Image (cartoon, rainbow, N blue to C red; front, side, top):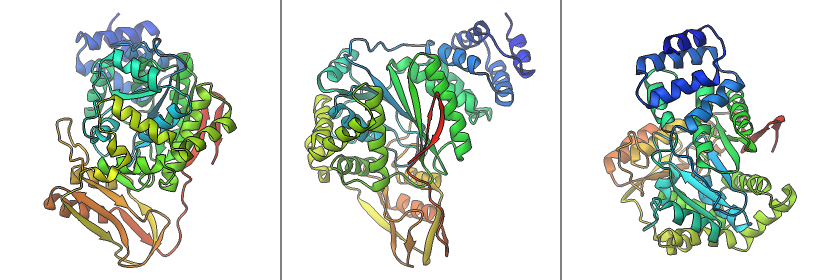
Length: 441
């Protein structure tokens, strides 16, 4: 078998076999196939696409290129949740405790933030003492005992994906929907959960800017999950505005706590409740109506918040910060963004908002960048709001005055005003299953 022939075959739009795809992935991970040949194949895939079978073969080959997590020592049905990322996306901090409080099991491996999308691990590590690097046995024991644990992703989960992504990043093939689907789902399959709920974000602050592209990505990921024998659903959620009010680390912990108390921003509260319900349904806890009732009860009686505090304590953190989030360290400096004119906020460039948070120190530009857990932004007015000139739009926080000034000028560019009221997407836009696409909520 020759790499040249495989590239030529895909270039002409022909379907690759399982054996050919395995040859490519195994050879690349073993450094037997050079970057320039893989780059040529990636570009061929970019233009020719992949069939459903090809994509499943590719994803499975990437998944088995490293460690496969065996969660069989954890009792019950394990349901994983994955988000394609966005600005202010702290859903795991709320959804995981909610599911556990209702009898579900969540064994979650999460990543760190890079670029304008924040990482769950970074947010949790802003809680003093919280450990995201724990032994596998402790991870399993924690989930069995309290129903949930969130840890950092193993360095050897789907190493083929890491190599391919680095190459995609420099060959203009990052935005290939089949390659995005394989990248995400290879890690999900390797992580070992029984069923998967996907949060496919769409809008200016997401990788998928249009509903059509988001649906296409969701359909491919659902097909991969189902093809691998894992019941998989995807919900399309609105990332045309920052999710909730807060973007950062400490400020997002505060918002998560408020949401677990039932006092979160409407859009974020709704998305968290809907994801928790769907995870519980897939976990066999009950039908949609019964699981909805359980979720609402867990918020109302405080058991969801208690689960969050319990996880923090079990993973070495000081859970008094969950009961008293005002104890979290505050930024040294802050400044306000005021409306420059009266009218409706017609549009927010959400990616730009996220990049402003990175400038403040809340995110990473490179993997080696540090994180300022006190940095962030709180948005008080978002798309659709009618404001008067001089009204407070947002407050920015940072440990650096220079960064604060730079980010404020940057964030101002993210708002577009108009005299007319804009159309605004719902928080949850559509549901994608193996049976098709359903517009909802």
